[in-house]
Image (tube, rainbow, N blue to C red; front, side, top):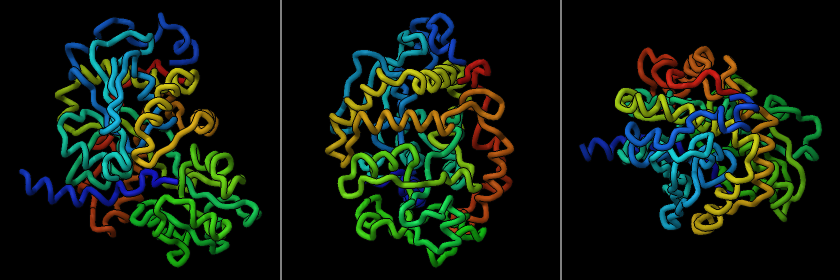
Length: 388
């Protein structure tokens, strides 16, 4: 198994020293005549020649809405783990610019997306989870322009055969079950500080490997992604091959937008015209991918098969199919509370800010004074007619 978004909250302080030293609806999705765009070259004069997007991991279904925008004739750089091709809109039309999707995780030395964006001005956009944006708001701010995932896929999983009475994370706390997680995760400090879990039952030594879970025969719980690990453990992991149960972190109070498409604040003005045209294409790509993923999954599997092994990543058709089905069934990709694909609920973001400030302050990375939702997310570029 592999680390998943494991160290994103630990890398930006390292970057600080480096920088200082250096310086629609279903009918819409199925009818190309109503899909956003349709005009060849629509982004050519308003966006960079290559719209570069940094992801947080290797190619997988969770990134499907990005790969949905990759047109025919794409190329793969196996050494850098990049996929580059024509950026197409919901009608399949070439917008006149390229899209480059850069894989994260081991391909980037497990650096956070925020730190990578601040090191490389060629990167226009990147995945920045809301809690990461909160944490870095005072020193390396970002603004998300599309929510990506309505619900964070991150979860805590356990063996239902070992703990048949456990129905959720709170029950793990009541039962005193050891929980392995990547040390430094803010959500865990939130769960321990609010009494859902106790500090003496959580273990920050998890490294992404399945070995400890298997070796202790499921006596400990561990973190993971609900859209991936349940399939991998039951279908792909020869040493386990049994179901796991899980609950999403979002469902117990840490309501974090995941895979959000973010940029540095100065780009909001600089590329305003670009984002007004591009964000609706991203919205439509989310709708189209969860409804008709086959073409895009072929690209994801091609990329994973080309460079995944070199970076310790394997991905299968079964995993991709499970990922899409779970993403849709569990509402991980869904319309926002206003019914719009990709929108942010400002009250929800402000609620997470309120919960996160004491956590990050205790971790010696206090957020910006007076931080509010509008500082880190915006709905200004969304097309309100695009929805699932």
